[in-house]
Length: 343
Image (tube, rainbow, N blue to C red; front, side, top):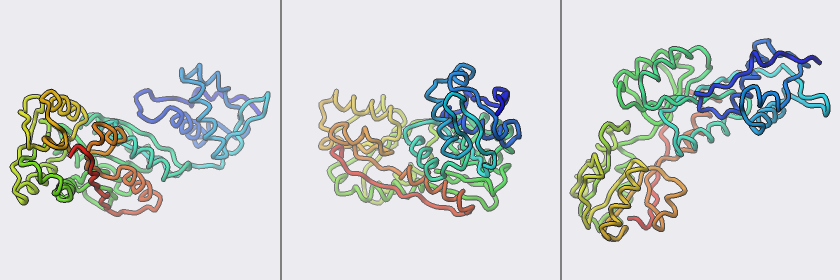
């Protein structure tokens, strides 16, 4: 066994949203694939890697544990860690390109990794709803991955999103969450059906909504949320004869008894609850609340916030299965209403 100059080929990207222990695992595996690290080479100690890359010992330990589970790495007491087998090859190198990091995106990420398994390298990058960052990223890294899993939400430049996405070979492409007009070819997708999802969810909530005369959708200006949500909301209200209004700024909106609110953003939910409480209105009786996207905290706030939500765990699982099966299906994810005391 010999001590390899591993530091030349092992790196961490501080701008990547991928957990550092996964980055370290993938970096070592890539160095093996590139012929820079060989069978019987000794890897640096946990302390040495931790100091060199300025990461915690726990991070290095988790990465080395991953490599042991794969069968690439072993250790001998008093002699250190060395490469046991280089026959392993990562046929799947997946880039997850998400618009933002949130509780719900983490659910997608975790379920995707669990379903894809250990035999794949997965990197997560966040482009913050910025089309320019998104486009430049694809231009720089298009040839580095076997698959791209993209959640395509943009505040500006969304009319050109299909142009950048069409540069990805279709056998590599999986679109999540939102359909994008203009994408050509035979690619895979796992979607929400935004217009029909909110329509059907509100339809299920009709018995509870009947105590309210007006429904208000809080849909902030310059939002990346699809306008199809507004279409589905408006269609429901017209069909079931509710007065309705789309609110762009909850700070400025008057709040009155007999109204039910549907919010998209967590910050707006906090503001809405605070304003209702200042008016001494009873939530669930005088004013109703429905919040987008299920989360554990919503089960306990005010004895429970009613939610309408896609199944994010299912979304991640389906995306991974499409890659594993090399499928080109387009699948709609289940959408659920969960009634609680806020309505």
